[in-house]
Image (spheres, rainbow, N blue to C red):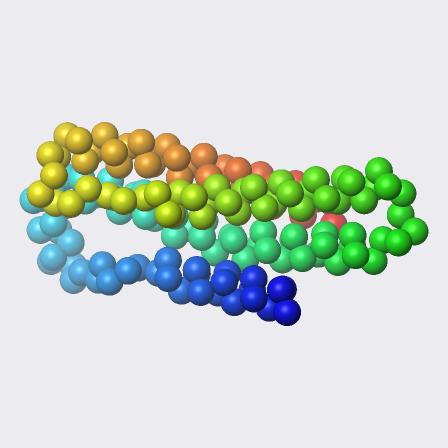
Length: 146
């Protein structure tokens, strides 16, 4: 039951993190870029997010694989069980990085000071790059142990 609930939440998050109604025609996109220089920076931040968000499913599947291994490891040494628990906890912490970033990401409105908005977006760019790096490293590490 808990696993299906978590799977539902992952699917819901993936759907919610779609393009959030920012559908622009080609002419509108060019116009927005010329009137608001931070639009391109915002788009870059969201591009990284949108690239990495589907990897949440990979993290979830890897975690499930490790959890299954742990649950069926009645004859495995305590040290190996602890290692599995630590690997699961690491995957959880990487997932939490993405969730925390999404919950805290709140770009300034168009009416805000453009310099302040640029600084905020640059800061968020660095944060989402770190999230991406952590996710890709965790996935690569766990896939290497399968």
